[in-house]
Length: 334
Ligand SMILES: NC(=O)c1ccc[n+]([C@@H]2O[C@H](COP(=O)([O-])OP(=O)(O)OC[C@H]3O[C@@H](n4cnc5c(N)ncnc54)[C@H](OP(=O)(O)O)[C@@H]3O)[C@@H](O)[C@H]2O)c1
Image (tube, rainbow, N blue to C red; front, side, top):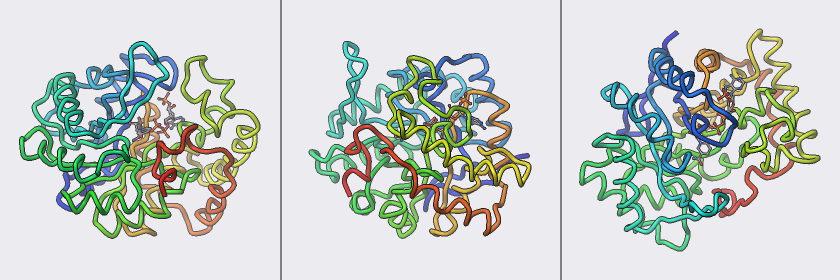
């Protein structure tokens, strides 16, 4: 099948209705077969996926370098999204800083363009908000990148509804990328309504709950020693067992429909967006062609009202925050 297309926000590029998250190809989710990951990029494009999502921080530049040749080989078809704002340190792998100051924005875009080997980024996101820098200054610096021809469209990640409105007043924002899934619905409080009101597209990240909603693992201990999810509050200790039990309603709907839990989770995001009246382009992450095909097929799966009702209470029962440090997220600033 080929994916339907949709406009990524008012005035934004037209993209396949599901994108591909490339983060796991470099870091965070255990060992990667690079040849299979690169084959997955090609398979995605062939299936109608056009929005490819990376960030400068994924593998400290590795992810941009990895997908660069694929992007260049298909430059007229790929809608390339990358991000700036999360700073790392070579001497301390666990360090994460947030930088939104204009000098940092200007340096970051040039570094991303160099690693990707392209002349322009289609969608450039501020990955995290640094409340110490006035938003108008940061978005103003991003707008200058559009004027300079280095960036085509602007996006934000993990901002509140008010922050999105303030940014949109400085320069049109095409897309808001934040976590949104059957398990994780805090964005429905302010960010989703603001995006709907402004005509900003929503790009749900981790729509599969980092793989947890698929039943692929039920506790952090099952993951590789260096897997980022080992430190995730929802997958650790007592939370893991409680939350794993909450995957059961998703699996039940999947079994009754003859589809997979991943497909139900993706269909849920598409249909939940309809309720709020906004465009969504989820970006499930995978490094495998089989999963890409499975996930792509979910974009046109329709859940019934009864199935949606069965999934409605799930998020309210999840225990544990979606990040160890919630000030890193929109929910932490609401
Ligand atoms: N803006 C932000 O702050 C932010 C934060 C996190 C992520 N992101 C972006 O969003 C993208 C997606 O989020 P995510 O990767 O965190 O989580 P996700 O899409 O919810 O889940 C990815 C995980 O699920 C597995 N998976 C994928 N399809 C599957 C299927 N059909 N059945 C079973 N397992 C499946 C993947 O493993 P395999 O690779 O082995 O298939 C991977 O471990 C990322 O790649 C990144 O580009 C953005």
